[in-house]
Length: 456
Image (cartoon, rainbow, N blue to C red; front, side, top):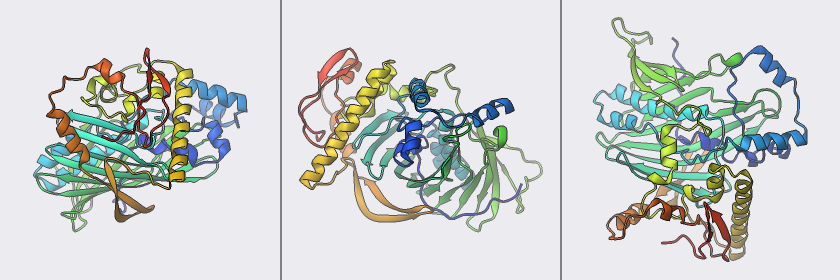
């Protein structure tokens, strides 16, 4: 096994699926027409020669074919608002508890790799609305909040915390359209602080490439290096994500090393991002030490069979109202009427509600321009810090702590616990300005949008 090149980088865009949330605005209008303005089909490239040749020779879709194709795709687009959430956050708990500095890095980088399992889910989420949030409270001790802080350029921020670690992310995309493919560069920054040791971890992933947007089998790949750096100790992990070759050769494979601060290999790390990751002690040449074996650090959890949204059990749980906290923010993604209609199987309503929300968002923008005011996120503040990433500079948003105070007030209140039906009756409202009442069907009820902002 050869040493992957050591690269120094900063930042990490944690929301793998959300890399595609704004793809439609980055490519040529003809391509967005093919993609349904925002839909990207991610087809597993594994398959036989006959299948590949048939698709490769099909050529461009006619307009009517594109429309029909988009209708078919609709049924697979789920209510995925979990793009920056961490299904395997227990790996960071294990990293915090681990005394071995190099095994600590294995657990932490396995957490980062586990996010890529989202690539197995071949349909993208809805584009976030400016000001849209998602909150998760006390999930195995972990509380998480994310907010869409910018629409142009599309940016999201997130904060998570439990007794073992804190996690902060600012994510932003850059794209480069190449005709039949598009390169997606994760201009972002993620910082994880392990509370027991105080170690600060910084992560940068490889760029992503969406292949065959017009001709052939469309699939997504992320060939290149992922670098996890312990900014406190100087240790780092460099993992190489193998490119996907013909008929799926090399797909999912990941391998690399944990290096000391002196850049000496200490542990080899290998596996597949859709299955598991393992590690083994190695010598200075990167070869496994005699008498040692591979030890598994992470394995993907069992997924529901024949699930129409291709979710994990975790994703189903945190998207449901059963896990929604008391005092759910009206800007929460669970409350989007287009998402809810799609989940209920009403494709026509999902499309019309999606269009209505996007038009309201455009109206909000026009109103801000008329008033000469800028959008201000509620839970994250734009700092003066500009950090350098391998793909450009990034403006950093910082969690302002207001949600923590908001949650404390709710938890200490004497109000009765909110039931699921009450949660469903909350109107989705990420808007900054008041607007006339607009009746919106939600579930089996017709409810009026509250004529007020989402301020507390």
